Structures are given as C-alpha cells and as structure tokens.
Image (tube, rainbow, N blue to C red; front, side, top):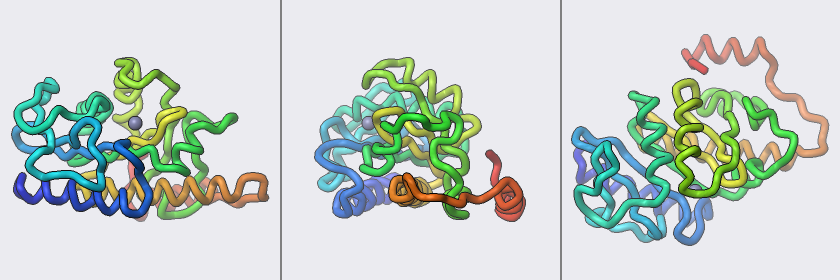
Length: 212
Ligand SMILES: [Zn+2]
C-alpha cells in the first residue's frame, strides 16, 4: 500500500474510532510502518480531525523527518515495533472499558481478561498487564519490550491498551475486539461466568495457527 493511502487510512480509522467514542479529546495515537520509517499521529492531535499531510514521519531513532511533531507516546509504538518485526501498525487508545479493566485490582497480570469468547482468543490471545509508570517514563518502553515478543497486545496499568497488527485494519479490529471483551468482563463482574477452557483454547490455537 502506498504511503499516500496509508496516510489516508490513519485519518479514516482515527475518525471512525473518535466518532464512535473509542477515543476522546486528544488522547490515543495510531502508527503505521513504512519502508523508510514510520508514520505517527501528531502530539495533541484529535484522532477525529487528522490531516494526512501533517502526520509525523519518523525514522527508527525517533527523529522527525517531516510533518508535525509525533505523539509523546511514540516510545510505546517503537518498543512494540522493535520486538515485533511482523507488526505493520499499532493502535493505542484510552478507550473506556479497556482503561477501566486496567484500573481493576486483583487482575491476573499474565492475562488481564479471561478468554470469554473465541474472537478475543483469536484476535488478542493472552493480554498481559504492564505495571504502572508515569507517562513518558522510559521504563514503560522497557516493560513493553519484555512482553511484546510473545504478545501482540498489552494493557498498560491505569492507562489503556497498546495493540499491534499486520495491517492498520487488523490492529484497529483487534483493538475493538479488546474493548468489546473488556466491556463484557466488566458487565459480568459479580456474575457466575464460564470462560473458555484449556481444551477449547488449544483447539482454537491449532485451527487458527495462533502463537501465544
Ligand atoms: Zn496513552
């Protein structure tokens, strides 16, 4: 896909996410890998009103090549790309239900949301929790690096999810699946719940060649 088309896609998906309330204000950021660097949504930009020509184009050291300065959360994206050579795009949101789960006590830090549905298992797999660090703390990048080799998505404690995909469409759909499953998890809180078992997960892993 051409860089021009990828720029348009970032703006189209950004608007779609914003219009449906999956991101608010100037929170959230989207990036896409290019042959000669990567594109990232600008700092303090609203995902609902992005301009394709003003997206930040960065090199792999994080230096701005063109466009507006990139999001201050660029290092979250870089950490994920560095560990996942197959990642073509990354979406990071503060979406309500995923962020709510990230604030809950008593989570299983290796798997924050149980395997409630087959689609959650297929699109996210196991979702680990990254311990809280203040925004901009490089330790957050190090913590992501430690997990991203084995996980296409992670949940930042008291913050929100970082989700990678082979394409931007795949990353956006996985982010939406995560948000919907987080909603189910919260709705089910206090109810007797039957999640998928080990045998059902093993069957999904085999049938859909999942590696997590
Ligand atoms: Zn954030």
